[in-house]
Image (cartoon, rainbow, N blue to C red):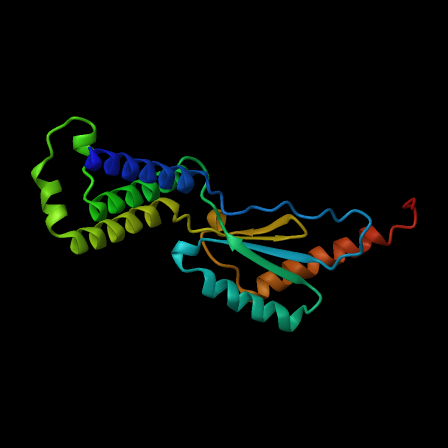
Length: 197
């Protein structure tokens, strides 16, 4: 009876871990309104973290900081569109559930009333190896699902470059030209004499 209660508790913990992993959204925040504020131009980079584009983002931040110190630069991970994001969350939850099941010696097959397969007994006898393989295999699949190849750049919420569309990173000179054009356009709009304040 005690082993049955222990298994129920372990199963409950597994379900709670899975629900937490699926419900956690990464803390997306709502940007503050810019109406009525004199704010500096803001450049936002959305890049594929799993592709290793963080280094490219940091290089662009350094280059932009030297040439345009007045521009605020922000960067974040580009969440893949569609079903891939949710599939990666599901695989993460399954990975955690399987690892906790292996470590706690709880067989999901006995809970479901199914005979335990031989490979599960092998996982139970080699817990460290099994957990490492499950972890790395799960990470590999998650990485492939969320790998978008994105390096998207916006200036004041206006898209100015998309690696998804062009297939390449912008050369610094090209990015400087785009920024200069955008800033000149913004200044001309603000200096319109017919503008009613």
